[in-house]
Image (cartoon, rainbow, N blue to C red; front, top):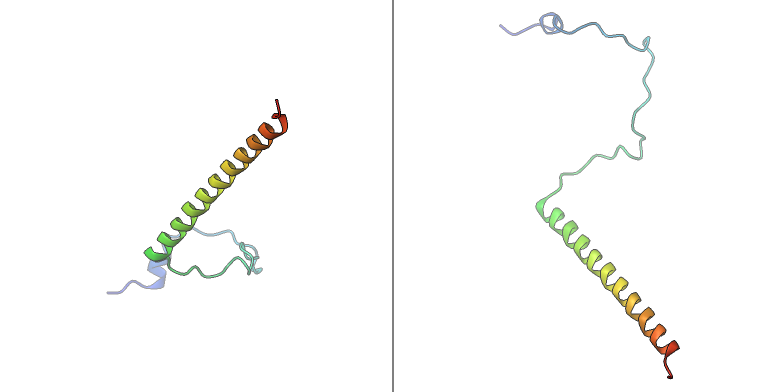
Length: 79
């Protein structure tokens, strides 16, 4: 025997609703894009881009420090 709707609803407690009014969406329409499944290749690509970006940032920071040290050395040089 298949359970009927009344059998399924028998264990559900009564709900206090919103008076029959439509509820406002909790997520805006622009943010409610359907999420596509993320493949292993997508994950690998994202991680590789992140690593390259971190290395690029570290290289830029080091270059800026070396440039500042060189300018300081050259400006105070001529002794």
